[in-house]
Image 1: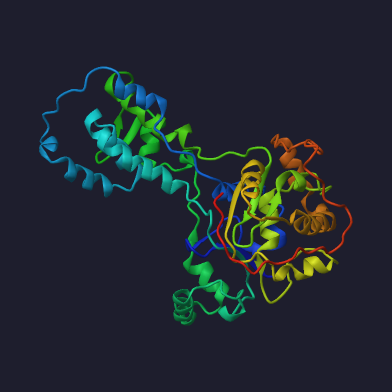
Image 2: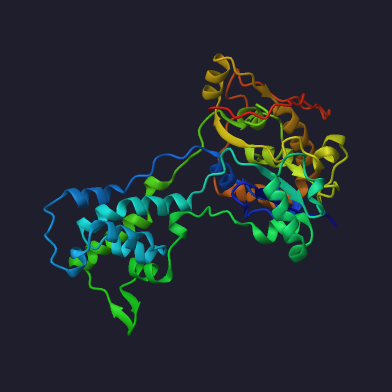
Length: 382
């Protein structure tokens, strides 16, 4: 059997959309790169180069439309009410004057496509989690506890309340976020209008507008994060961390990432039902993960080293996650051979084992090692 497990962000009241089934059905069937993206630092969002070039070239025409008799403040308020991509984008490219006002609203639109879970309370809750008192101590504020209690009549268990009321995390690539109307204008020679299909001329102003829309929708400048070498998953509540290089070097037969390490350390349920094969006490104890409900972010080993040089104490618990992941992947590898083949076929690359001489390596024995738990709950400036 096995219970369903879902990753929740308590602060944002969001849930990770690649979870929500039996743990054995989704844990190793994905790299969970999108979960890692949620924890990485976001790069500043800029407009596409094609747009910047268009705005700086030539003269700015004097507009005679009645629209431009409105004060800039009113135009800004109008743009703030445009939440659909097709309406916002097409209004923004009306002319250079409007685009200048619209630029900050476009940036906000992109930011909403790439939410951040950095420094948020994250927990993977099992379906058998009924009473909120069974959650880790202190994970909910008093107001949140009152809210959960008020929803019990509607949804019942704590897991059901979170699953039904927390929305899917809004992590969607810009290329996947096109309304039908905008998609038609972008890629077809006809667009659906109030009177049916209308031909879109090739060349001229129509072509310029369409190229600008394509630039906005395919904006590579909003690909806000990417994996870098020697990343570290930091628990800023307990000042503990897991190193990705050590995870890759840990003789784990399946392709795992820091996301897998995070998931196995934040599980919480009264029952150890995972729909996974195991015979290790550390996996059985995974139901009460030491990191459940803590705050996280991903940074680099260099940044972490700078903090330690400044006197901050951090504890490496990579082996704790490595023991669990090695055992689970060895015991359950046969169930996901097809997934491994798919990973290889898509050319997904991983760091070479032993690529860093000072990175260390996880031991290959299946001992149940567990690092000491700090009682402090402090933030770190990572």
